[in-house]
Length: 259
Image (cartoon, rainbow, N blue to C red; front, side, top):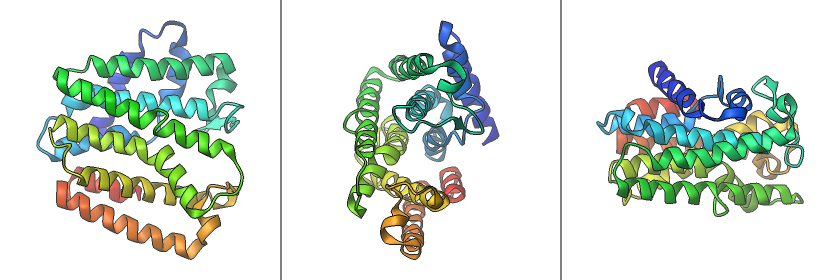
């Protein structure tokens, strides 16, 4: 996994090198980076399917660029108004609000440039561009942010919808990207795995952040014990489907350690 991380980081550095005045804030946001979970899901799925994961490296980096843009914008004063991200000042604190907005805009836009020029067939690139736009746009992640920003009282179904849109959609993008590269996108198991993994990932996050009193924390709605049971069931089903599709290999091991 360390070699894969090094490949992702090296390629990201190459891809942002021409970002001119925004290199510094973009570098601040991208490195050293978090788990690189979304790229790893994509690349491990390719590897477990018998494909050289380097074939999807640019696609994986595009996804990490979009994820990072979303974090930059989530941290802004108009959104979550956070001062720290991964133990260091958020981009708007370190470089100013205007540069943070522009760095996020730049990452989002450049991600599609990278995607459109990935070393894949035209047909696959078109499918990937459509997938990325759906998962990250107003039908996916952005809609989730809009619903979250509305505030108010959330019931279990509305919380699940927000989590599905804000969290699961980029995991779905990772797994379906692998499926598209493999010409296997008709198999519904990819979507099932993505939904279960995204749900379990968010439940883990909610359990860790239960003291923060966020209105969209599922623990506040169904209680601690019910949340733990939901995590157990969701995790078990997710791992079962991964084993069925990809075996107990890199993807299985990655997911097992995260949820």
